[in-house]
Length: 394
Image (cartoon, rainbow, N blue to C red; front, side):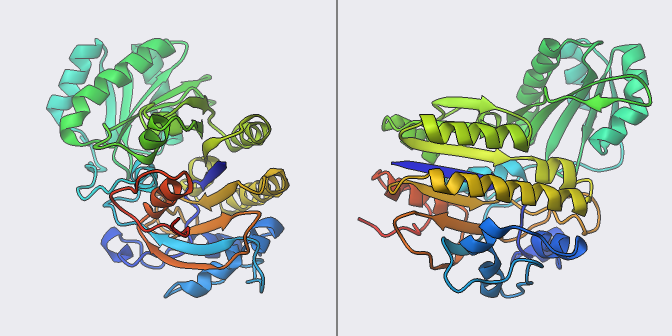
């Protein structure tokens, strides 16, 4: 028995009921980007019922190019997040069975973003000066301050609309091992402030042509309680993560981690695992939608990446066995047509494919943790504290 849980990072499907609290009324990642590019060609996900989901939502908008189908291959629904926040960590943790009632701390956009005592302690512990200390785009901040960072051997420290403490450094000036160690120090220092993630942001190149590398690392806030991943591995059921999920879950409850930083490598890894992994959970995150296109408000790039993912899922489906299950969802929204560059608080799609069962409506789910509960049911484990399974109880 195997489950493949694929997270299309940031692929939201319409404003959440509490979107006003986040300034996100009117956001709709899939509907707006599909309209912006003149329609999406995604025959596999259309056939699975992705285009059926908008009709379930109170303010659902049709996805251009993806009409509803009479007999979908998969069961379809939408999930509303209950935790406070609209970031990667919060979304993935809720899928794994947690609920964050107290959200992570957000910091001011204007400098200084982080408290002086935090920066002072970070400088003292790492032995290097900090510059920036403000909210910024990652590519913009290295373009602005990369030359100074190289000349002074300092850290570029910045935040964003998410709860993040990001540390950028040129790989030729500060070795990766030292950057990673600095981020471990930052993680320790930032825990009292409830910072969601510390992110190492190495880059290379020369002034005017700096490029971030794929040696990024994330250091998440400590998990408050065991997740479904811990329950699975504790029962001897393998859990293999693909993408950046090993960092998101602090390497806990994971049997094997395949750490990759782009969709292409993640998709290739999943297809290889279908052939070699005989049991357990394969949990994969496809990051490009969010990292490369959502934050940069690039509808065309976002649409191309979705169509590529559709081809990948088309390859995956016929490789699944009768006892397998495929779950496709997202962790938050990031509408590339919306104001600003932030994530958007949205419903996320839910597609559940089982080769031996017909599709149907799963309705609107209250909490991403319905996924964790469904995994507990699928693998015959004790029920999780939260969530309602979308699978029939034994």
